[in-house]
Image (cartoon, rainbow, N blue to C red; front, top):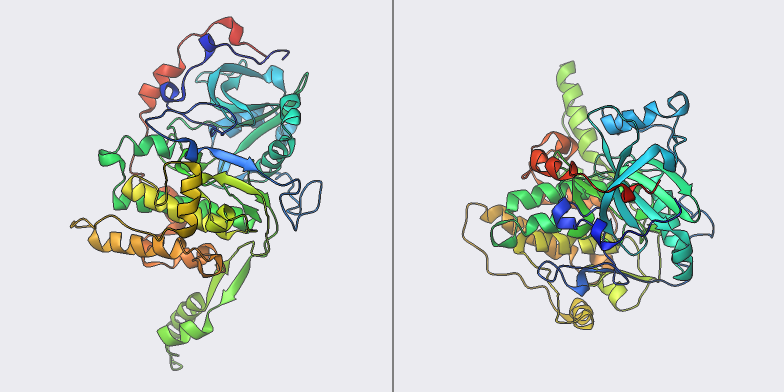
Length: 450
């Protein structure tokens, strides 16, 4: 792999591929003016030590490879990778010669993403997304640690709504490659622009919000503060469910998942029942009480950083004002995300990046006039949730202490079985036949870099 530079004749745009497998950065890449602005591009003005509580080296998260990925047990892409491994072990001892690059599908601040497949693979071919990082170029920009952070995080993830790392390896002379799941459905930002009035319905917003919430809960349980939540980084899989992407700006910390007692609240909602001589009634009463008295909390409340990273329209007030920040920045960004999905714009966007940051710090939250519709009650709950998430004081922000457990308990998610989100039909399912026809177009042999 002596040359990864691809000329313009070989590039296929993100829209043509119906995918945005990597986010753009203010330091590179391009952006469609009709779809986004510079304030929507990720930036990194990090201090030399991003995490104040993290030691040097591999990070305090103590991330290590998983020996198996139970959520991929029925995944044909994972099965194809395991078939190439030694005795089915993970990580697969795969390298550059095992993959064939099909075309470039995106580029970001720290790497270029290619559509690829395994060589000599039986029909039908399984596609993957390969992010190729030029370590020499990143070293000159002093961004090697960002690529290393993303690689460490990808190595431990196993969740339905986050990426699956299928293989990672180095390629000569100075490239690092990670092979991940390919999302044929593009990203949530592009999908929003295809909706009537450029916004999702309240029901569709609740669906995507629920899946993002579960992904954030999982990351926080691992001690990972995401720090770059936005629709461009929420990819749509072939089945219509979401996948978070791009972890190079994430903060690695620690978390201690616990079962938190809720005795005080529970006693008010569920009065103590008298002993019963009927055993089955006693068991049911006990189960109800046990369920109400505890909740699962996994929030990296000790994570602190002074790095100025994120996306201008989504950064929290504490980041915009240059203060230290923690996991509460993810809950602020989550509130901005819900606002944009519902109303087609972010709440504090200004004419310039500087104006946007000033608005985030000083401007009060304002909602558009409410529409009289059948979803009025649910929209009112959504507004209440957004207001609780967009508290400028991080200590008062919903989720800052109890994390996802606090957000899950909100009325906006009442009646939604969060444990079974994968069985729910998504609002939009990509047209695989139309997308697949684009994948089969013949490209010149000069795309064979490996």
